Amino acid sequence: MWRDSDSDSSDNTVYHNQGTSCLSCHKAPATGAEGYSFLSGGTIYTELNATTAAQYATGYTIRALLDTNLSINYISGRGYGNSRSQDTALSNDYNFTAQVVNSSGVVVNSSATNSHSTASNLDCNVCHTAAGANGAPGRIHIATPVVTSGTPL
Image (cartoon, rainbow, N blue to C red; front, side):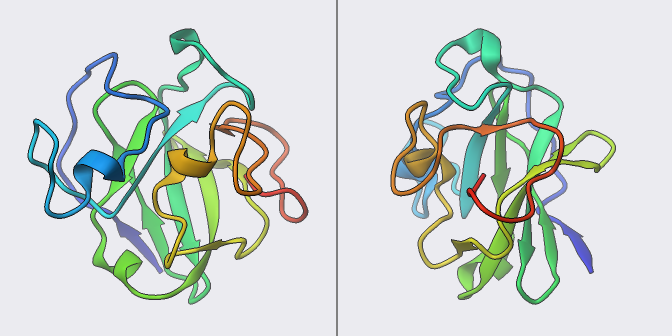
């Protein structure tokens, strides 16, 4: 079953805190200047250890494939490479597979199956830093072929 996170569109802002903790400002109640909250977010890059703005991956979003087989499609957030979700299914306790999808919905990178948990892994940029943290190997990035086991996204 597929479900889009929400249906509004985001502006084309080039920069909006890419690579930093999304939920530090956008977790309900939102404390950021926008006053806008969501449940999950992260930045997609072109390279695993990206450090520059030239490496934001535009035209890609995140998908969470829950262990119940529900797919939650994130939408583009403010700032190139940013992706976010307000889907309330993420409020429940599930394991999920994180996926990067292109504008046609084709998976171009994936974490190991059910390697993430909605209980603790919804602020993607906390672990997915240029050097990686908490077991993440680095940035969420576009890659081919798709990884289905082993190292997380």
